[in-house]
Image (cartoon, rainbow, N blue to C red; front, side, top):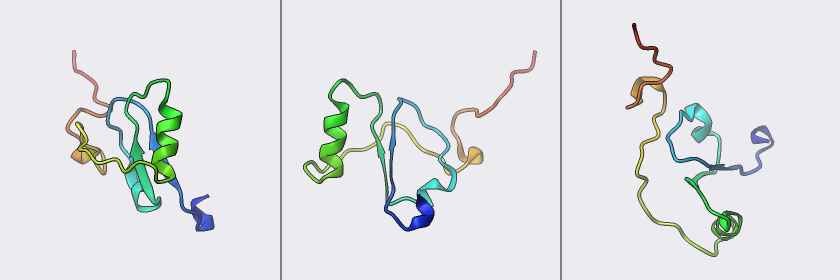
Length: 79
């Protein structure tokens, strides 16, 4: 879909950061829904259609790659 020049918006669900890689370079927007409740579909639709302008700061950081990750990624403990 990205190759068709259609505007793509990524909606992330989950209460943790993840490696996004180069996806942020190819999409129009990224919405972090965190851990939504029963009315999350309506809330996200209101954001997408301009009914609400979300403005807040994220409580977590999204690193560009694993070298910038603040938490161990694919880290194995030595015994």
